[in-house]
Image (cartoon, rainbow, N blue to C red; front, side, top):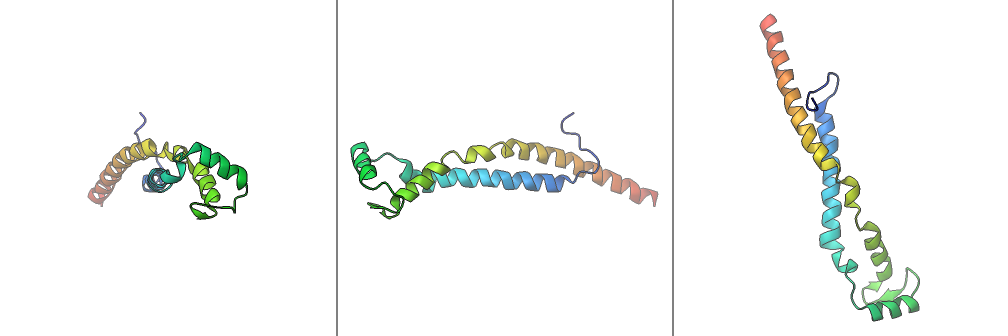
Amino acid sequence: WPVRPREGINYDFVATLYLIGSTLALSFYLLETKILAPLLVENDPVVDAVTSNENDSATSTDENGEGGNAWKEFANGMQGMYFIFVPFVPCLLWSLVVRYFWMKETKKISLLDKKDN
C-alpha cells in the first residue's frame, strides 16, 4: 500500500522538503506570469527585428532602458522553469497523507508505552 509509513523515516522532514519544492514551483510560476509576462509578450515584430539587428549585444539600450535585451533573455530563459518543480506538488500531497498515518502510529505506540509503564 503506497501510504503505509516505513520505519526509520521521518515524514516531517520528507513533507518539509516537498513543501520547499512546491513553493519553488509556485514562486517560479508567479514570477513568469506576473512579473516577467510583459517581457515575454511580442510587441511589434518589425520594431523588434530592427532593434535586434541594430543592437545585438546584451548591454544595448532600448525602450526599457539599459540592458533591456538582457532582461528579455532572462525572461526567455525563465520561461517554463516551474515545470521542473511541478512534480513536487503531488508528492507533497502524498507525503502529507503518509505523515498523517505515521503520526497516528507514533501516537498509538507512545500511548501503549505509557500504559506499559
